[in-house]
Image 1 (tube, rainbow over the protein chains, first blue to last red):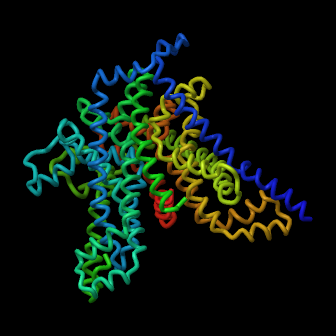
Image 2: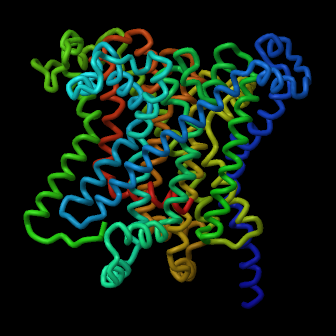
Image 3: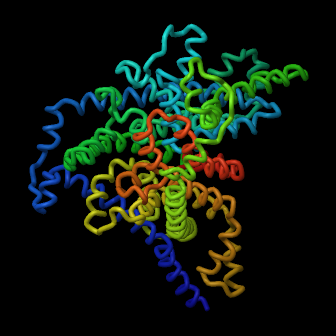
Length: 301
Length: 281
């Protein structure tokens, strides 16, 4: 009996692999292998001509060197960082504010907070079109509102001007990201024991001090993960910008992912498209490592 | 903000009203989406805009349903892609989550890490190589390409969200099921799965929505107009009829409605998915 059970345990070990391997192989085939393939492509000359003739020449780092000589990739990287940081700052501040607000105990708190999450669920394609419409100079409601409050005197072509286009896409992205920040921070807030605030106020700490000395430190893990995840999700943006501006006007909103897409699928320079995607990957990789270190320390895994 | 206690009925009403106003402002774009789809296009081009249509009409919807570029076909394409992708990712993702939760095996930490990392990677990273790979297999311009690629978004999510669920179920349950004659597999299907249904509902709805909302894979791998899902369809529609905003918004309503329906029924699960899926990773 004991022996049988041991054999059973031995077999159990392999059951685990039976359950896990199909998914793992699927992911390695469709994500893992392409990542490696992407690196290979970026060191070759792959375009419409070479694909037709089925000859791919190894050209080392030429694709990367050409990209940096051209210089656009540097501008695009700056755009991506500006877009990411701008979006994160706005959605974090507003999301935090809403999280604090909805953490008050009032009747509609939970229901309305849940309702706000809907903007995070809406297909990004729709959000992009909707904001493109609302920001349009000829019939955009946002211009109407701004003119009503005398913020601007005449309609602004938000997505048409090079100087404002980036802010247009940042606003749209913030609308998607705010609920995400709000919910995560709200969950963090709800774990702070009420007694802490109580004893602090007995000790004479006012609202502001309680916020600085209790809320912020207690919320640190939630804040960090919201910021890092926000960075990862924002940095890789594609749909939103592609639909709203396609990277225009004159590259003003071009980010790494749309640039990579344009190189690969508009001018069919697959190897340079792959190279840009790898630059994007390098950024995300570093940040992801930071995130993994963070959750590993918090022993969530 | 537990800094001060609410006292008095007045204050409570005041805060509720403020909350409603905030929510209305925040959700105004969705109101605008629906309202604009009900206006004649001439009214949309009036300045200043009318906050409520002077005359409600459903012409834009009629046009999208029965006009020359009917949305019925792309709607069915979206439904097909999202459903198949949901099934593929459930079939692969649920057992993987269970395996990682229930069995001690070498490398399980690396497996979890793999799923965690793949979840964070952008589609753009694998787009060019996948295009060339699919091209080699003749998968381009078939539904298989977006179905497979959309599943790669959902599978890591499912694994990461369900594993804690399976971990929280008592191991004794499985053992007693086995004494009653179940093997590992049937214990998993008959006992463990039904017990973790809240997690399963979250996982299923997200698996569907990821594929339903996808634009980049569908747009890149499918080049035949009749095979486009709604997301790619509306993008092309905008390209052709860029100023007919009432029609574009009506199209968008068709794209958003299933999402809203899922959201209304499963709000609790979706909010929980948002938190556990991303915080715990």
